[in-house]
Image (cartoon, rainbow, N blue to C red):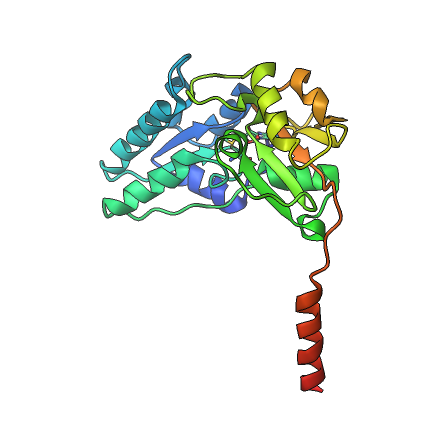
Length: 250
Ligand code: SAM
């Protein structure tokens, strides 16, 4: 996620020893940094095309990586954050390589979630934590627990069914607010979070009322964090049964 610091020694070693490295990272400076580690580094960014479904770009990225695998080269895909978190290409590239009989595996990385836990000082274990891709959260009826944290990824393209937009506007976000308002008051304080990608930056931590989301400034890298709005409800029936078990054990 952050240039220079968020790379494991093992991931770095794989990058250095690969025959070819495919990159999908946060910015050009990070690309340049990774180019110093291997002589054959290829950016996957050009596969993104304005107005074209991201799914098509993703399929083309997987095909480009697999073409090198099929030549029996040692291929690394270096993706920002954790390559397995809200990321279609790494999972599918590995699955396809395995299906074709090649050895493939994923190395974990430091995701946006890891950074937000550190920067916001929250522990997902305190109240529990739910994660959804924002548009999927809107398209399907999900059961959420407002006593836990709710983290919505890709909020900048909330409600985009085309997968081709770089951002969606207030009309789309108004519908997201409508969904969230079933569980949270419009005055509920939420957080727009952006982890730093360059060490000289500061994280974005913008607190605002849920209703203000409609006109908030959002970036493709913004993650929406919704803190709990209600108290956890005690499950007395289970507590009673556990008390009976404990009495038996004594
Ligand atoms: N694999 C990435 C990870 O582990 O963080 C996530 C990739 S997902 C396609 C893109 C979404 O991740 C963004 O819309 C945003 O919700 C989140 N994200 C990416 N970069 C971020 C950053 N710098 N700060 C906060 N969230 C970020």
